Image 1 (cartoon, rainbow, N blue to C red):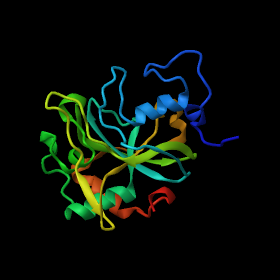
Image 2: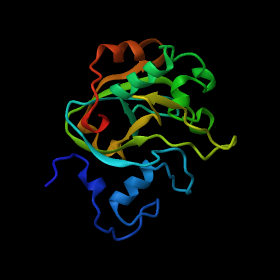
Image 3: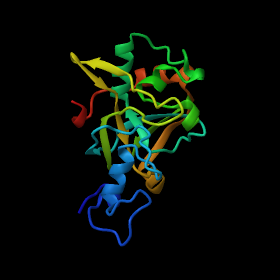
Length: 208
């Protein structure tokens, strides 16, 4: 039997009725969320080709939020991936352009400030107390919004161009005991880079 705290959200047995996303199994519902679909059928970003992974106990994950976006959410990234982004852009100024929704994090994570009302002004840092299942992969473009969506910026890593890889924890609010907040509301502009530079950023097995 799986020891992952959120295993029920990845079960492939049929449900008695379809979910709000139209899925017949918990796994399919989680997968549609990871691919960025909402209840109205809009593709609002997500991961272009999600792969199910196990995120081990002790892993630290980062999430930006602010405005209507809260510290508890489904979308995260690893310290290793943040390091990859900063190494690619060649500077650590995540404040430039952020207030206008055109900062480094908005660009590489394809965050729509106006539609999602996510300012990315704060960040949360969590440590997993239990292993969990997640979806992992490169963030996709956002085919949504008044301006026709937003293309996710790409980085060059190990000689190849790719999108920034994200961790999607479906319905994290249902198993919050699996995480402990080491920082619940840090300042993205002033603290994020310094905090993450102090912590180990080795790639997880599925990032290698």
